[in-house]
Length: 300
Image 1: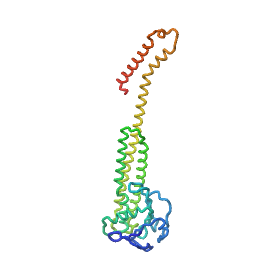
Image 2: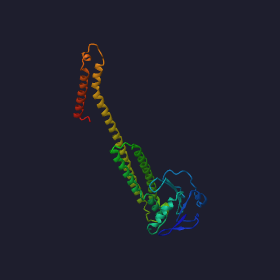
Image 3: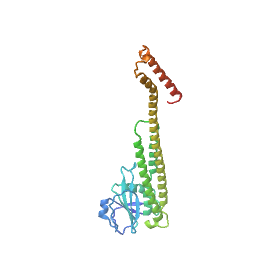
């Protein structure tokens, strides 16, 4: 599918891409691009793992690896080429076309060109990311409430899952910042634009703010992990406290039991008819005294 850039908009054109074409936006699948590539540029088939942009002297090559978010069911991997004022996308998922349609529906500005379109495209990629990061923050906040309520379920796995997701987003925005920095410095060379700025610095600033937000979320997740560990330690300490109290109470009882368990022949208590109830009374008194002492010392 090919779009023609006019002064104020994008128009869908039924045309064939040629090496002499310019100001066109092309969307192809990997198979279509292998069959119809009219430009003197190589076809890349290596796996896409991150966002990048590279200057190949006669053309610009780059890729996007969009992370899983609410609007994407899985990682979206897109290649793009900039050659002779043309922008070519290699996309097998149809994501680029949907983004272009949203750009076409928005208000255009005068003297539209490939550079301004690419800026709009980058802005669309991160358009709702602040809301998505806010949703992650709300989920972390709910996790914090569940941790403080001492729920029995294992929350550590969920915290780790969010930490991994936030880390991926951090690297994602870091790569977008690299793209923004490159385009801010080289926009006139890449897109052969006039003296009018293409405003890639705006995209760079927004990507930087989003990365800073992921840093805050990452710190928040670390705090939740520490809170969860502290709650586990508190529970273990409470259990150990109970076990210690029980052990301390029964220690004198064990001493008495061991003392009279020696069964020497000349122990007068063994022949006394009231020795058994007497010892039981002593046991009860010892237990009561221990409980009173523990209560005053605020051991529980």
